[in-house]
Image (cartoon, rainbow, N blue to C red; front, side):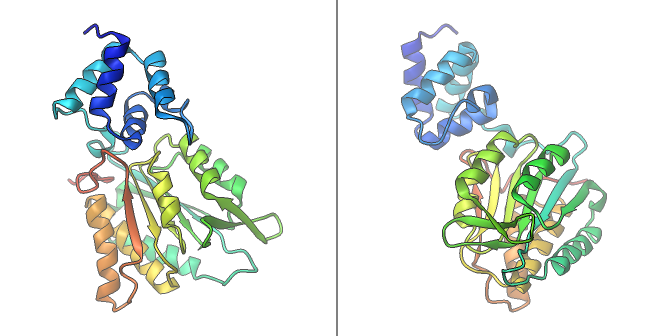
Length: 283
């Protein structure tokens, strides 16, 4: 399939209407190209990088399938995180001493109890890191290469997470820094869960790099955050889809008459169907 460079440019425009579609296409099919992209880069530059560094025949094949409605959807919505169907969750917690003290211990205990009661509990590995500092995020992602990154702690109105410094004080991580980190170390990541107040914009930003992300639209209380997370991971442990697990997490708040069921928000990457994505394979 020998298309000229102008023909390929035109095909990109027809098959990938938005910048989000273009980013997702590069991320899922040409990761070497995706790593060259940056926030704020003009679309024409992105297309040039794609044509310069990707196999033109492969690009044309995938784009023609997309244009015709064929099966060129991102692999994330069809495949499991690992060959064995298992999933590793990295739970990172931070509660700087000058902030309101949260029941993070109760949250992780409740999550672990729900996972142990799940049908496919042996397929879920749960790893925790406490008093997380900014550098711990990078260290833990490098070491664990998780499929799900979960952060529990405080978020702020101005789109930051409150981690800890070496003295137990606050060390903020902003949206841009977090997105940059996840973009580099997204090796196995399928999902990020930000169980922190005002974290919805951060979750939205992270869907440039991962299939799905959960954030909180408003402040959320300890009880609601704990119940949502525990029910969410239990559902994943039963082999439910990400969409079902999210809705079951919100439903749990209603069942327990906790009036915060509309605060969690599920964000999904362009081209990904959360209703078809399972992180744990059903037997």
